[in-house]
Image 1 (cartoon, rainbow, N blue to C red):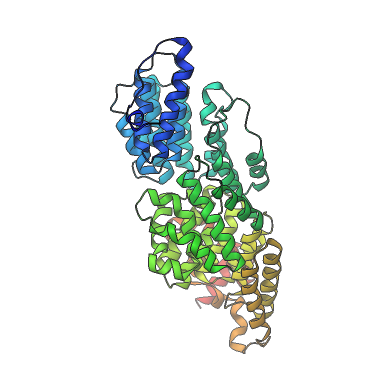
Image 2 (cartoon, rainbow, N blue to C red; image 1 turned 60 degrees about the vertical axis):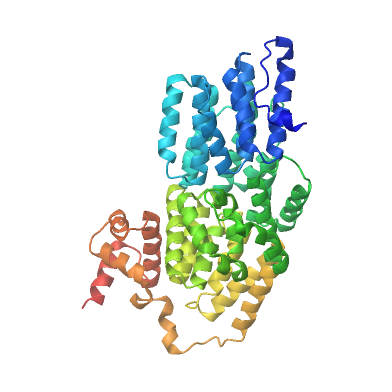
Length: 529
């Protein structure tokens, strides 16, 4: 295609019904050539200009809007937002304008943009005035994206369930709808359902040229989450090596994260660094949000994370949107672990609060376990870590369970025998999932503990029981509840989630050897005599 063709903008209008299909294919080819040439904004302008002059009917308009939405998903956020905002200055019909406004709101929601709520309101108003199925569909996707950004997976699931992706008008959006549903399944810990969804053949009504590589990336992330590490790395490398034109920056970033994660778990640090180092230069928000998951992998390596201040960037971006954590939720405790190791108590606290918030909004065993694990790492609380391990045993998240077992084994307040058993189980689990690097770490912990005397000095004996065993946070909760406060009131006054107070109360009961609130009141009164 010539340079003059790429600069042509909208193609000349041809109202002949027999030429509509050929015209559409020429237009799409022009837009694709522009995108592949790194001129995404121009590609969006070509399509938007054609939408503004379209006189061929509803079906061609739906095709044009569908291809425009596809290109939006393939571009980085700054280009997509700029291209859509420029398109809104064209003389669009009210229905097309409402769809473009919904697309802008969806991008904002996915990146955690501070104007998301206002943009969704504007899109909703435009849709109510003149919207159609296209704007309704993208408005729902935007609202679901907002729910995901705030960790409300059940809310997002309900919104996405209402979308009909089988109609002819929704064919171009079907892959995006399907990918969002899979993301929700991964976040809820429904890994078998996600596996079925990613490997299901595309619907026959879907466009054959719709970008599907995002589904492959999500399947790789599912494998990472459940411990199918060799398979995840093989598929990620194959997909990246394919040279397919529909691999967006987002998909590329997810696949790089998968490759880096597997190589670290194998103990191949140099190869992992080589895969991740190129992505560390991305420091402009919101484009860097595409790489947040890769950053979560890199924080485990001080060689990469400390010079780049990755932890600071990741924590800030996750507080805008928790979406990047959803496909592999156990990266949340990893951030807390990295913050504790770096002595950054503020970052450890912020990530713990974030994971607890998601656990409150999405009360499933996976997130409740990760909230316990995060708090256990932050407070060095063995009871919270024990709770995390027991909850994770009910999930398919084997890497998360192995990590929690090793965290428990590394806890300084745990007795040697229990710590050794936890480290030994972690090593065995790492071996089963194909993580020899992590297995070696767990084996070293086993060896260190085996060389430690089983009987500690008497000063260490009461660590697991009694008032003295309570953490400062547990003491504050115990004091308020003993004084008559409800768990909800304690959570409000202590600026923590209800889930946090509930977990701490169970830990308090365990440490004090009691079972109800009346026994807590009596035990607390005895400490004040």
